[in-house]
Image 1 (cartoon, one colour):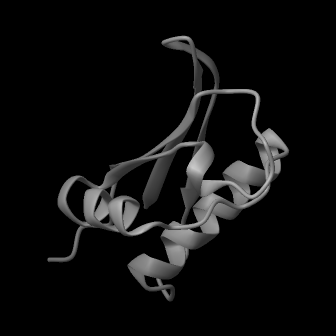
Image 2: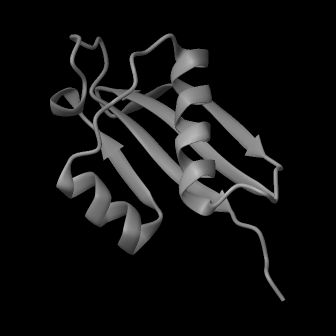
Length: 92
């Protein structure tokens, strides 16, 4: 099971959150991440953010990143979208 936690923050307060579960073992980790981001954006009614180099580096190191207004084409009414892996498939 692969779970991602998406949270919207404004003025240092969480205003919305959701957990997305991707349970498709045929997908690669990258495809699971993109699918989870699409589902979170759909649920929050957001356009899909652009992965900037800083987002990629943070996600590779920490399995977590923040999408700020720089990552969105449209204007946003929150400070950032926090995107974090909370459970990954175990491969034994």
